[in-house]
Image (cartoon, rainbow, N blue to C red):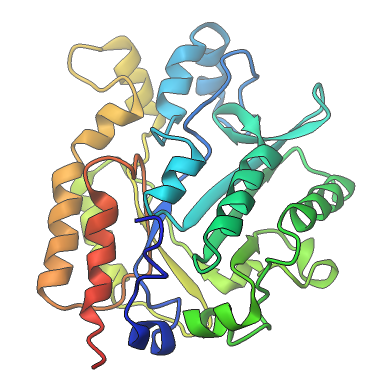
Length: 309
């Protein structure tokens, strides 16, 4: 799985744009570890902040979204990484954040850079989705470090045909990392970054499996040649779900991994249905705990639908 892009048939490499390839994606990719000693993220609801003062482990249980580090995710075939970044003034540094703070962000990015050195034909998309406690100056410092870590590997939107670039076109440039910077700070100052509007990633915000599956069905009909497209196959716990799990532990999940268990079979069935029906259109398929349950293989089999011989 570590070389699945390199191993694609030559006709797919030459003719299928990256926004039509089925690409495994990791939701809140750095949330395989969160520090119990770190503060609660400033954007959390007040009820969660209050809970976190005394029951930090509960907040972390609902915030952990992955089960293995970035390197293992890469080796398993994940090529899209949803990254949330927060600045901690007390540490004067940038960290991954989801509920609480995790590893230092630049150490996570270095893992991706090292992987790309070893596997030069694997294209990786890093999506800086959120920025917490940033100022314009901090954006500049952060962006400068991103460019430095990914030195010479950043594939800009204008290096080829943007989201309609094929793998062959990307490989020809010697570049392989796409950074989307979801903030208006970046486009003019950092042309290496892809702007916010180059990626479409609607969020259903539901803890209901049936509503999520209906949402994914609707997403199959949406396509833009100018954008990458993320299918957010994730259940989102509501504040009531978290409080119910805390106070009524006998009948409700107490952490995200338990809530996610009810999604395993429906998601596998949905991907199999798409494959059996020969429905093209799934691009980046973003999932929690993506290393589990053979999800990556189910996503990648969709690329077999491109029979170009």
